[in-house]
Amino acid sequence: WLNDEVVNAWYANLCARLNERDGYVKGPNNVPRWVAYSTAWYKNATERGVSTIAGWSRRKGIKNDKLLQAERIFFPTNTGAHWTLLTISGKHKTIEYLDSMNAEGYGSKRNIDLAKKWLQMELGGKFVEDEWKILRTTSAQQNNMNDCGVFACLNGWALGKGLEDPSGEFEDGEIPLARRMVAAVLMNGGFTGEFDL
Image 1 (cartoon, rainbow, N blue to C red):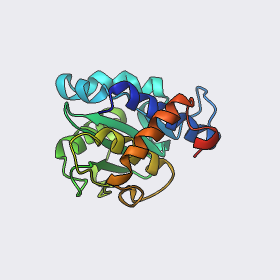
Image 2: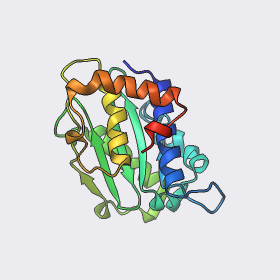
Image 3: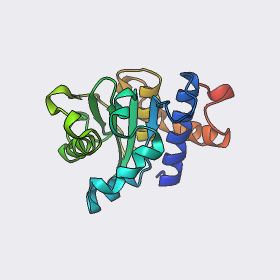
Image 4: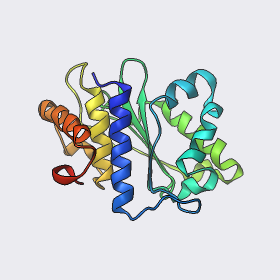
């Protein structure tokens, strides 16, 4: 199992490198194209309401309609016993949910509904639900109960590389090597050198 610290570090490093690659420089008028929320978002949003994460967007530089400039916002999700990945693209007005134990990928109405509530909170009247598309992106499927965290990390990695179908980028049999890659990237200090995107 991967814990919150590993998943948060993976996504922080992934977004830092993607933003660097895209020429992002932090500043009050600059909006990052790649953003990752802390894994704590899900517990806060489901137990106390989506408004409890309202201030997080400001700290991420995507408050209100600034989020419409983001290429992708990652919401790594732990439901208590399983890791999945929810993503929102403000730029393309899409929502995706990737689940390594559900090949359909769009099976979690709860997470899609949370995404819509978050968008409504952030955009207010500028959120028109009919303008947003739910993508049926699929994840590669795991064959045990231990690897969901690795799949959640690799799904974000594949999407960050611009690959539209993460399900074809890695297979369950490659997960032992992928676990080593996750550790190596974090020990390396991110996606640099041999681990550059």
